Length: 320
Image 1 (cartoon, rainbow, N blue to C red):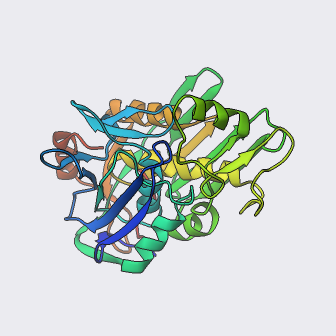
Image 2: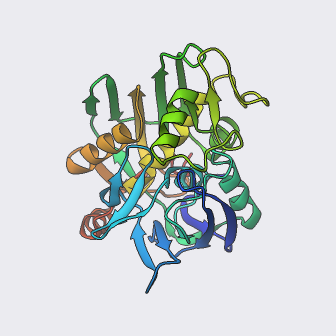
Image 3: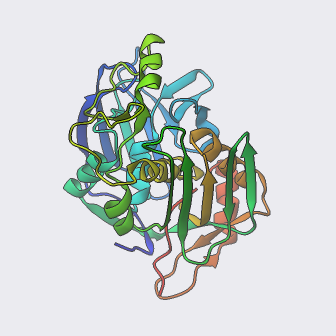
């Protein structure tokens, strides 16, 4: 599905699951939003009033175990990346995400349940043109053995992701993919979060991952896969890393036109590359989609984006 205009959800839809770290039940509701709203998380269930945080790179408060969003008072919503991946991956521009706990529910460990919820209510076009962030020059970041970069790409948004784990059942995997709603649905959205049993045990002992299970995680021992149902894709691990990239780069605030490449990456690296891009005002520009035409740059869009402090990822404009 390709749109030259912005999109939102046709109506609201609620999902229920558990937080991967707390193990506590969580309700999440995806709601329609106005033109240019982007993605906004509303944390409900708090003492006093609900609090909201716009899903942009500057709202990230932690990236160690997941992407965590918050404000000056501290963290508000953890594990935001999978629902963000579903929204961006399926081409939804504007949505409000209401969560009644500190974590987005882990569901089955992938973005597929959120994609199913989007399918249930449908996507509608809005009256304003879709806007994108076009990458104009390469931006590179290295953190230890991890490397990531964003660079110009004429074909929309492309991910080239490589992982390399010491566990021989994971090992080195790579995936190169031009991202569209169709390829996201077919090749990425069902890939689950994964880990090694020794690491899961360490998290349990530290009070984390209380909601993790074989129902929402792919778990490897040193010499075997512990999930009895097997893998959804032979290279499910690298596909989940692609899923995380789509969600983390959604924090740019608009869809990205560019190529993202990473080696041994994760949430920390994804965020570092994105913030480095946005910090260099000569490395990107805002373009607006027009039906049957090439994207055009709009000065008003650039000024409005900078004034609002928002600047992010995903797919090619609806042009031919």
